[in-house]
Image (tube, rainbow, N blue to C red; front, side, top):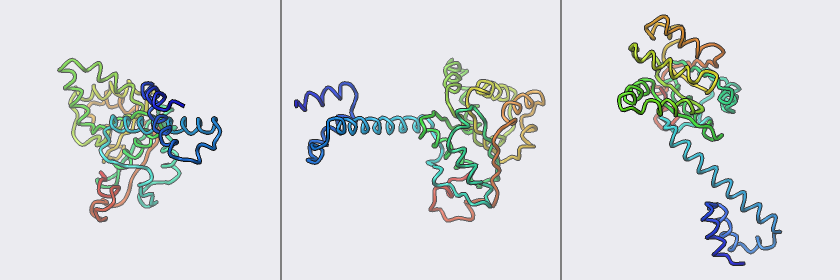
Length: 252
């Protein structure tokens, strides 16, 4: 077998996982006793693993998650308002595939941001694209792109993202332009893509923070009905826990 030309050809075809696995097989005597089909299966499996890892790295980089959170690191104590069955169901990402909405509410430090980022990371692990924004930063980005002419492209990228996470909703009043921008973003996603919103405010106060009754009705109509709702409880985990666990030090 002409190994080097084969390795070169595999790399030219961007089958780097197969190339690496083939090189490794040369140093494992027991592999030589396997059938051609079994050895080929090992090569294909390595290529699939490399591609999965590469895709996950790319999706996580694009997601720009605020925290390196994962579902496995969540504190699912019932006193926090986290039902294990609900979290595991959301972690399956079926709600994302069905283009649904998740609303997370809780006081400062109860873990809203960590939970939001954990669900977004779960989406990336299943090959779904995610993007995290604090709402204020998203509105600033929309204003900036409108000014430099990249607004249509930016909105197009948002619309194609499987899961959009909007954190810190309701921290500051919205201007008329910001209300309309938020409605535009949500309108693009309703029934087409999934959205997660996290806020310190109880849901009954979301309407008044928008500042315009008509636009508030339109915005909430697109996110509240049939949404999955989680209310986190308890004291701030920043005050009650030592700063050793990322799920405790990075809550919001």
